[in-house]
Image (cartoon, rainbow, N blue to C red):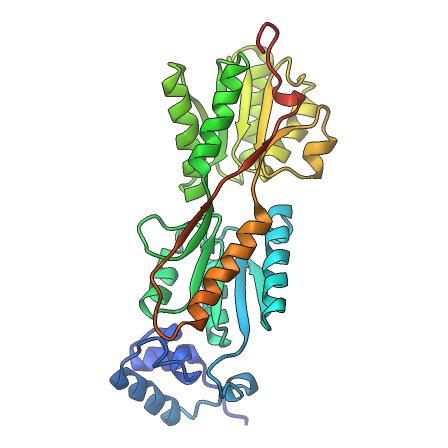
Length: 343
């Protein structure tokens, strides 16, 4: 009977270290990431004792580099992440790298598992869009000085290189714009949770409403209950039970869900309720009227993320974390035009 192949995870368990550390040692990257001699020798000894057989790719890493990078997005079917992935792939190809990517579906277990798989496969670095409850795997990689760049979202309490939108500024600017157009009962609609980019947009909205002495209206709910919840509060608006004259949807997926419900309920835009979203897309343009939105510099985000990763990959010693904050632009349409009597 063939002997069962020993996994990196089994070696890590026997050595009392992380799978990421084992992968770095077995891929010849111990010195590069500052792994001590004692830990290195323990891992190598246990690997020999367990008769570990590296894969062909690992055996070929004579230079210590695979020229593979991992990319973890929330949902590759989402146009925002698809365009981001395409730009990173373009940058990688131009620099002799191949991208291995997958989707987490904003599920922490899937993200943790996929990132660990990427490390075990010997990628040189990872670009990731984090989701909630994934700080442990990021902290583990950071501790091992593994090249990692976060995009669109970050962990506010950790020093990890990242490329972000100035979300607070964007949230405040679109709220200011709606207020200047005569809207006073503006609601912010978001999924529940505390992802950094949504938090920033919410804070910007709150600061604008507070600065103008207006009452905040915040609707938050899980993805699983979003359709029921959106239908519920839009029905209340339609019946006059909820006094809302403008809606800010916190991301493009939520905006699209809202557009379906608004059409279903025959709410007039902007006469009954004005709309503003994030990221844009075909659905935004095909809706009547087209929907106003915050346009993120996706191409620049991808380019900057790859450059930050390359800095780490080309350095001879660990690099300090860098945070690149980009500014958004705005697409204004009739979905958020000024109310009668306001310019």
